[in-house]
Length: 572
Ligand code: ATP
Ligand code: MG
Ligand code: MG
Ligand code: MG
Image 1: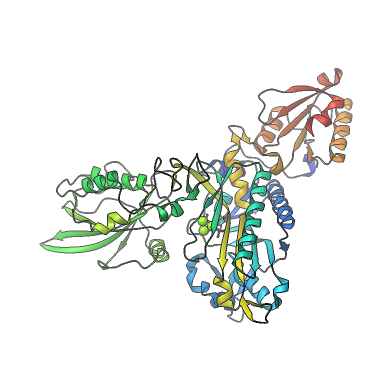
Image 2 (image 1 turned 30 degrees about the horizontal axis):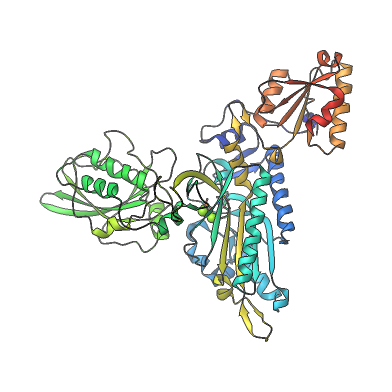
């Protein structure tokens, strides 16, 4: 590739909506271009990285005997109604109508379609096991798209689906996929961790998430440095003892002492929430006005933002006794009535009763929005139902590991893959069966396995950057080697040697780009440091006189002189 014939468009400054490093650097390096909220054009450099991710994923999937097909982006509503997900998925599922008024889903994943393929194609036990996968565009109308490709609305996922005769078969297929994921993430050259995940609503027995370790990760991972124990926060909390920890009780009691009326007390509760991972609190607010007590129910939803500043509150008017039936419902409420935690608009004392806690999202973090700008004149009424406290199953650093082998540590991660034993959840609803040896129909056991192809690009950057830009792991770099000739158009010998090396590298299968744009050295170097080419070779007259070129690895602080005829071997 010659830079003069390629498209490079770098920026000095990142746009202001880019919050985290990967988003900033991807924008600055010209990898992506925003078209709408959570919707991006993958620009040529970005696409090269995406293609590298895909190639590795595809290779390892094929190696694990998964079979590639390609399922449609637009999928008839009827299939989604069969499994009940048309209703259950709520607003995250993007729906469209055709000219006849028929409804369709834009796929967020493809369980329905792949199960439809299998129920019509698979007749006999002889055809199993089977694993189909595709690498396809997904659409999820995320409530809060952000961080560039990390949480987009349109994104690329590899999703694989295994089909087996029985649970033992499913477990084998699951293990094969798990092992393939380990290979894939190792090949990416990323630091990652596989953690046990809760498989919540879908049920079934096994689920793991693969996380790239990064401080900006939205998830908290709980692990034991002295053993294999590793789980995401939800899974860890699900098995944590329900009894309250002394500190939690104490803080709640303190916060709920009547008559203190201090905003610190609210802060204490919120802080407790922060460390104890309470996820939301439903408050009953009693306002006394003209001798009449008005009750209002507020939902405090404490978000998992890394910036510690967002506490949202949704007011639920006239629903003093309302109980939320599900997490989805809370999200629904919150999504439709957002607002910020601010001062209660009254100088009069207000009674706040912590009505109950509800788990909403993993690992929320919170803090008061502004000092002296939260609830004032508040009384925390000390009548917390016992159950409220007992419901808090929180896991903190230093807790004993469930396997008894040490203490728990917590670290943040970005979910880049998810493997899931679905069992017969879909085959039952969609009647996907095979005939066993006795000619009897049996339900097919399913597993599903996702990898966030485009999210990985962001995650890789979160782990590999410096103040100059991206530092790609070799396997993901848009270009492995960049040739930077000094005076390509002025010096015959520079041009000749550059061309020679360029050809030799190409012939050796190295992904090389020759920067023949005629940029000044400073600007040229800055571009390639920002874009993150792992190897840079500078070809200049001065070095050539001594038969030498300058090599600098992206992490090196200085260049190394390398003899002309040794360079190929040096970078390979
Ligand atoms: P999250 O918890 O981040 O919302 P998820 O659990 O909803 O992700 P899955 O349904 O498990 O996601 O999908 C498989 C993979 O697809 C995820 O592990 C993640 O890498 C990727 N993915 C999911 N949502 C997005 C998104 N909005 N943008 C980019 N990648 C995504
Ligand atoms: Mg999601
Ligand atoms: Mg998830
Ligand atoms: Mg997931």
